[in-house]
Length: 374
Image 1: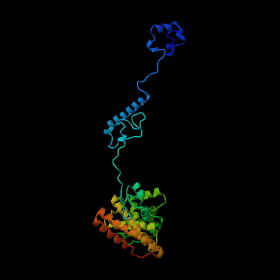
Image 2 (image 1 turned 90 degrees about the horizontal axis):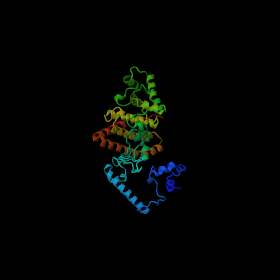
Image 3 (image 1 turned 60 degrees about the vertical axis):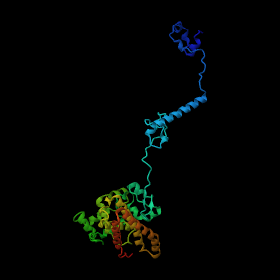
């Protein structure tokens, strides 16, 4: 082996072709630079620092880098958010290519602390943060109940105007029982104020279609009666002309309080109360034009009417059952009426509340009438 053998073997150039004179000549002529030929044996690289001191130095360097980044980004992050300070303003916090940005420190901008929404319970008037979830999420209106028990007390009435029907306020379609009650009474004038005393048939001939026949009106009533298909029923209820028909139809229903299901009685009495409030200019004549304050007043009226309906219908029941219902509802009903006036005074003024009180008295006077003999 030549004196270059060890070096050539180290470089991987010591092959069979190295034995040719041409290869030797190229090496001797300097074609392969001598600098590529390492010494026969190289000592292992030596560091000036020990392994332990090197790790300490790297750790210190990393800490210094983080502090520098903190100082550089402090102007670009919200106050009191120093746990996010290692995120460079120009780097994506979730970018795997950024070695300076931890993945879990995505900067967030907060508008401020969340404020708890509170209001007065529709039943008792107590301050609470609990509200009807369906009305809040589906209609964007906050109707407060301080407890599930209080919501259950008025659920029979509230359910008819809950969720999407809460705001804008939409009256529900007629039940089949209501339709069967109303159709035989199409040409009978209902009790009430002078403008309400025309029969449903005369109202339809005046405001909907001249010369409308009784059969045509009966067909129209079945069109605004529940079918059991929610989407179809909701679509029919949202037709504006149907809201007027529903209002007039329920006014034309039987005036008796013990000849119909409690749910239907509540909706009818709510309709009568709404008409009285509109006549007194306390509410607009069209429910779906209410603003949120008027809508909340309406829902408070629904709660009050629910209590009134239960106590009215319980007066037709046997003694023991009537006593039980009255004991359960009489105290909450009084609290609900007080809360209704307090809301009206706080929201619309004392004169409005006084006028509302007079309307309640005249509305209750409607029911000092005969009870249907069953």
